Image 1: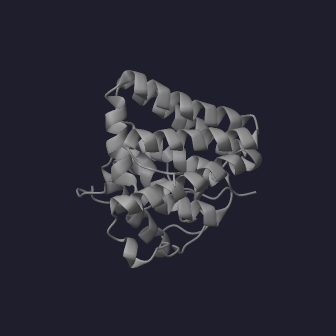
Image 2: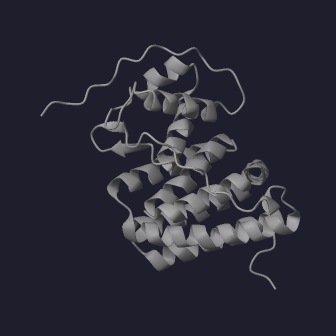
Length: 246
């Protein structure tokens, strides 16, 4: 059986702009849509791609994660990252009423996020594959390192949330969760900065995440769902956000 060889793609000039991960996602997608990379092709090694685009491996991972979420790329055990589809899906949108978010609307968004993410954790405990476990554990270890280094760990936290969502293997649920995380991204980032300012609080948050991972690995769906919901309720309280109230 002939292996599918990596395509020889010319180097691209380094990108210098805001939201680098988004820029890199578009560059990779353009190579796929132009036919330089086709369905089934394996992407070059991470370090090679990072050097080609002139960005860090962290930025590259964010770009690849985004394309995975859009069902463009996928991880194949023993092969690495391969092209799955050549077309990008249209992004999910709520009504334009929510384009400018008030504090009350943040409460609604966060409450919906808590509902969906806790359900995703329960489904992940039932449906997770070995590849899902590896992705969840890798992102959790990055969060542990961030706590140890007293760093915000925003990218690691985003990857952790996305990994659990993907482990639910419900594409509609995944899209809703990622949409809500995007809407609440700036708030979540600010909260993580505040959290890391207190070593005790940072440790408590990490332990909340550890419980979620523990129950997902143990395939205890109800416990994973409850642990995720408890974490999100605590996170809302730390942010002064009111959810599950009258």
